[in-house]
Image 1 (cartoon, rainbow, N blue to C red):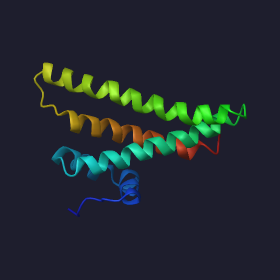
Image 2: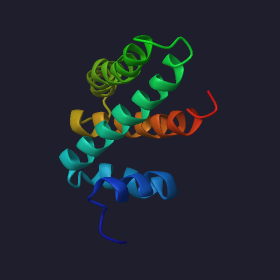
Image 3: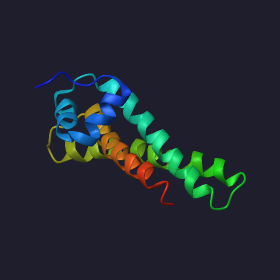
Image 4: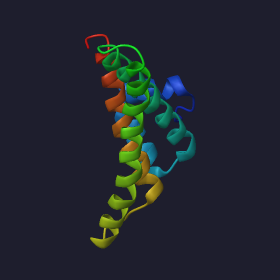
Length: 123
């Protein structure tokens, strides 16, 4: 197995081409803070760009509001769901770790944000 990607663009490439490697890295707990920062940036940028595309339909200040609102909704959702996921896993007797659960949720949101970014020109 190759060394895990550490920079922003290599992690994006890994997310798009080899998601199993990212998931294995999370499972092993390798450099989760760096991964979380990059995933957070992907979610923020991808969702903000989609928000710009959606806000451009109305124009004006709505562009800025949508660019701020869409990433906040995604990030706040992860902030609420990660501790809940960890608590439910522990209650069911499954192995649970808040950093790993948060990294898994952020991975899913980052992939979703990349899809939204790809769809922004269509909108």
